[in-house]
Length: 166
Image (tube, rainbow, N blue to C red; front, top):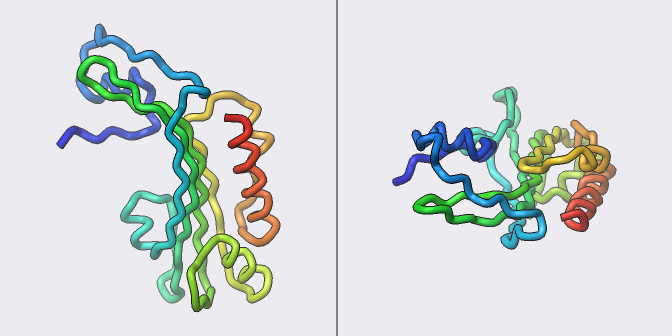
């Protein structure tokens, strides 16, 4: 199995970590218009499973059940250069950690937002952006730490704005 490297490294950093010589040819970096692969993903999992997968869920007290929801959108292109393959792209991921929630059906972001507003459930949220270069995205991103109906609406608006920009 090939050695796995972090996704938030520069191409030069990957070359050093992989032990490639400094003379190794750099791949041609694609433009945003060339990112031809798209994905959206939704996961609902226990906080311990989320922590095992490397999501930054932080410390949670043991007496209350916690769940984690993850929603992400990514765009990328794989570029082959010689015998190596490089993945260039951008990703936006929201991680919501929920406690004190009672749900009989599927746990989704809209359900969590409503339960926080109507039933006193607690939820904290993180928004992570990877691979985006430039300063204009910052003004579009939501600034929430707690999660409710308003923050969900702001997040969905941000996702739509980001899709229009890419």
